Every structure is written in C-alpha cells, then in structure tokens.
Image 1: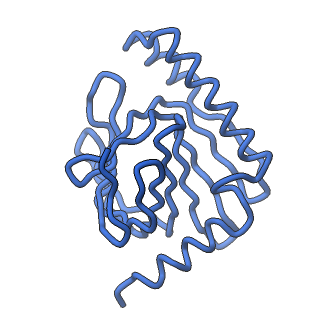
Image 2 (image 1 turned 180 degrees about the vertical axis):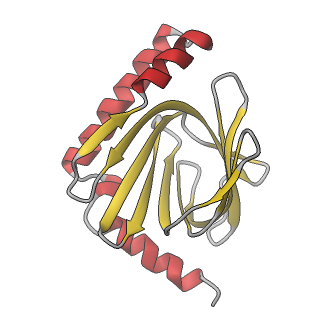
Length: 177
C-alpha cells in the first residue's frame, strides 16, 4: 500500500458501505505518513458533503488514521480544551492522492475532561438493515468501539497527554503566513 509523504497535502474521502461518497475534506497536511499510520492537520478546511453542500471547519484539528483499527480520531483544539470526534470506520487506504475510508455511522464524542458519548446508534442500526452489513462486520465494528474506549481509558495514542498539542506545534512549523 502507498503512503502519503510527510509535508504533502491530501484530501480525505469518506464513503458509506454501499460505496456512495459521504464527505470530502479538501486539504489536510500530512505530518506523518506511513503505510500503517497517517497523522494530519487541518484548519478552516472546506468540507464537501455527498449532497454537494459545503462548509468550513471551525478550528484546528489533528487527525489520526490507522490501517489496522476500525476507527479514526480527530482532536479539535478549542479555547476550552481538546475535543475528540471518533468515527467508527474501516481502516484507511491511500490511493490517488486521497486517504479513503468507509464511515459506519457510530461515533464517539469525547470532551476535554475525557467523558464521552456514543452517538448515532439509531443511524447505525438503520444503515445496517438498509445496506445488509454482515454479522461479522457488526462484531468487528462493536469490538473496535471497545478498543477505542480502552485507548481512551488508558490514555493511549491520540488520547495520551500532549499528543494533539505536540502534533499541532509541528503543524504550525509548516503553515505559510
């Protein structure tokens, strides 16, 4: 599998299980790019929804993707602390200058005090029926929710103290003023 080069700008493409485009983040700066891990950063990035609607992200964010785990993690730097938004998703692939994954609806929102909420369970159940997720996929996704929450409780990976701040500092060294 190819990996994006550190210092390059890539798009991030999110799809649904049926192959339909869900969302595109137009520009993310790669801070670390390997075949197994991609860490990126963006700020005020245009996002294009599958229906064509566009919006701009509000704050700087550090993104974390892994080729083994069925989730990705976004650490958003806000005035009152770091908020995390975690998508339960397929592991990423990198092709045609874009990082791509399948979004499976379940999300975990984590607050600066590390409390969390599991979101979109109804949407997940609806799409599971509509798109006929196999039972093995359902088990993989729920197991990865458990892995993600273990990472959170153990302060592992992007949840470790200083992780988001350190990568944000590195991002600032790339920014053009």
